[in-house]
Image (cartoon, rainbow, N blue to C red):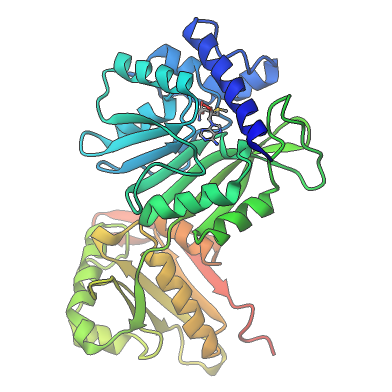
Length: 403
Ligand SMILES: C[S@@+](CC[C@H](N)C(=O)[O-])C[C@H]1O[C@@H](n2cnc3c(N)ncnc32)[C@H](O)[C@@H]1O
């Protein structure tokens, strides 16, 4: 791909922006099926956003449905077009956060700025730039989103490199995009400029090569011509060191445990035990803590034996807890990876546990670490004044316990 293709993409979206400004819609989603499934049709909760901003949408998914945006977050939208996703992100990030849109097309930037002014939103900013060379400093963004843009880029490795650069450690990625099916012939750029779309597998590989972790590329809808809309999630690995737990960590371990119990969604237990009781209950092996760059303990993982019968010698039940201010930054997944490595090296073939169904973040983290859901035991126990269900999960090792 060449500069000529960049300029074709640019001309196509400049023309679309001019049409929106003239009140004619984008003129791009003309096919009835596309109009019913893409762009504005993907958005249902657009309160407070000008109708023109919604009409200008050229998305192939809704990145805001893919990634969590929290108050105070700095959100970056790559290829922000008419600005809809930026305005919606700014609402979620609240006055303490902000949303920044990057686009290379002046007419789109102008349109987006008008939409922001009409919405009366002040925590947004639109900057001119290419997504292959983002005009933002390193580690300055909590969340990167993008909607139907990266497929257009001739240099995806550069885009993913930029995402990894501007994200803070633990930062999140939520993208809606288009991939091609294996063996499909992409259409030339004079049609829709998706000539550079890659397969799902290649997309994931390029994200991983850029140093991003927890990558998933999941089909969301079939499209014409061997294409698929996908949702993409990833995370910049957090800078933690996983080290063996020592007695000096006891206070932090119990404090993080109590923080977790206080959420009401971690365990039936409500009070952390004394260190002696905790120590007694857990195996001496496979106790690990995560320390941040300042040496502060931000999470721990440990296991108990499920039975004293020799047949269950390779089966353990684990607990993983992350400090309240370090959640959602990849600490849990880092601890789970380390636990798997430690237990497998010792010949443990099964790690199991139970999770309250309300603890969705934990269920997702475990699924990504290779755990599977066995089923839900309904109303298995009383937690305070209510009966609760528990989802049972397990991870069968593919390397230990095979003989
Ligand atoms: C398909 S539209 C999507 C716009 C917006 N994300 C949405 O959902 O409506 C593609 C947008 O990306 C911009 N764009 C395409 N390639 C780009 C690049 N390499 N760098 C910066 N912007 C780009 C275009 O100007 C256009 O506004």
